Amino acid sequence: MDTIYLDNAATSFPKAPGVGKAMADYIEQRGVNINRSAYQPAVSVALTVLETRGLLCRLLHFTGPETHVVFTPGATFGLNLILKGFLKPGDHVIVGSLEHNAVMRPLNDLAGHGISFSRLPADQDGLTDAAGLLRLVRPQTRLVLVSHASNVSGSLFPLAELAELCRERRLPLAVDGSQTVGHYPLDFSALQLSALSLSGHKGLLGPQGIGALLLDPEFAAALTPLISGGTGSASDSEIQPAYMPDRFESGTQNLPGLSGLHAALGFVEQQGVDNFRRHEETLTRRLLAGLRGLPLRIAGPLDMERRVGVVSVDFQNLDNAEAAFRLEQDYGILTRCGLHCAPSAHKTLGTFPQGTVRFSVGWANTEQEIDRAVEAVRRIAAG
Image (cartoon, rainbow, N blue to C red):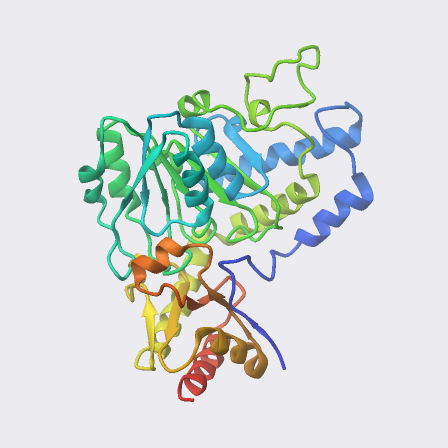
């Protein structure tokens, strides 16, 4: 039985062509470190890393210095750096009500250190009115941090409207782009973001264990590094370098991962994010149309202008875990069931504590696969 992979919100599969080869080439043919030695293989790998920064700048319309693209182990690390490196006791933060635990767990850690937060309310479809920010701003508010799109409902945050309100109030705006970068166009400079944290292994079609944090220079200057150590630079000093990106890139980087991300970004740039978006819109619209009228609830908006290709459903006549198990065992359809590391989102959507079965499309999925998935859901839901 052929499998149909519909768990791209967790990680993309298949990866972009050339990713595995690029990683194997680094490990088998080069294998050196960078910023430590000046021989030719080290220079070649350093150039790959430099080109990867440039590819991210072009993709996300980041016009700041390329040195302000900081490589991280993933989006979670970047979000922790934003929150724990920027906030001080007494500060107040505004977040969305659909946030992932990559945001909420660090915030709850900080709550014990005199930092408070408020949530922007969303409706039961996961849609947020950006104007709600005005009711939450306090004199102590120092940061706004939101996910561009929910990993549960797929609903898009009204980022342009929120960015305008933040600019008017001189509030830094940071964004978790885990579910949109590579899937949906995002313009860092037009939005005048302070920070954007992203994963390399989702919409960018790269390997796990590599991500990036794009930082406005003024915001970067206000951040305290979470990790200090060797950078290969300023080796005569025991003080962490103040210049970028060394300030935030201590230790040996994930060079196999960066080699894979470099190849993936080249593919994404060649194909075009707009083309990926159109393809995924077509598939998601087809999926939503097929699911309507079945004995299940779709948790999220039906309007494609306000969502990405993440569709969560709550089966009405059987347990969601059983439905997900049968989808795999009987039909070869791979989904994710549960609370998706986002209990706040499920509480907002009315799917807590049972969770949902999540279908998330990607660049390699086809209309025929969507039709097979819909038919499988129809049979399972009918009992």
